[in-house]
Image (cartoon, rainbow, N blue to C red):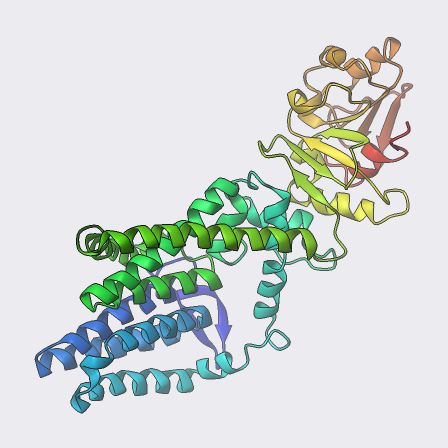
Length: 453
């Protein structure tokens, strides 16, 4: 296990510590949670030697947290520590109890100044720090992404869908997630899952507050606040080790909520959590409809995920997708680039992964790659077809032969594709300089298509 991240050096050449995790931010989240546990143990210790022992360990954890250079982790710690100190303020009335805590603060602050982490925190405005600006650019698209996919974009697809359909075309940063665990999961889930997620978190915070009020124990609420904050600034909640401490706090919270809190408080908490979740998601929905980022195309994914419609009107053409032919994750960007041309302006098209998802009255159809493997006979179910464009099929000759009965079929092959016919044939277009992947597939699929045709 290595303590250092494989990449990313900041200030004076000091590498970020990641403790064997794939991201220093995940290590920072764990350290922030552990630091809260140590501070809580120090403040509650009855013996002086125990208080100092816990404080020394907390100082070590604070230095390690600084060496991750994670601003989100530090902000998460401050948020959790604020709750912890407010909840234990009565225990800190004795002056000598502050001395070990001040030691932790002095050691951690000194480490931040010595390493330059304090300077990094101070220069975190979007105009100065690209990392902050990129996050804000990502997050401003979250309401639109939620509205555009009522059934969710699918597990693990948030980063790809953002890059494909929402990222400005003059930007090229690559994202696996939305650099925010909450936003990532809300985008990937449907509205039912979103409601459960938001209401569940609201209920957990209510349970933490009840634990504080009934038992005078702020630690569960403090840990939950730290965890939620860390998960807001980076996708750290996907790491199971980050969730260990918050999950451990569920036991005391549930115990107090179920067995110690009055029934009236329990039912009130449930009602408030449900109402709060509905109001919050309702507001997000309104923002997603009325305050969309400008410059992008309108996208809508059906609730079952079978169809994706690009454009505000009824689709004038449909394409059955194959990621190899369409450029893998870049296919959305390619289509948006085509939509910005004169030829593609005002485009309205539909995209599916399977022939079964096509509407029965489709007139203009493009089949990409493996989507054409079913052969021309699969088109018999579509009586209104007037234009079929077969792009990079594995059996182009079969489709060219079908032109005798369906003259509206056209075949497009890259000149370096193994399946591209060597001889010329009517209805065949050979794309120069391409193989199976055709960078110009949007123009091939949708050029010269209009609702009237």
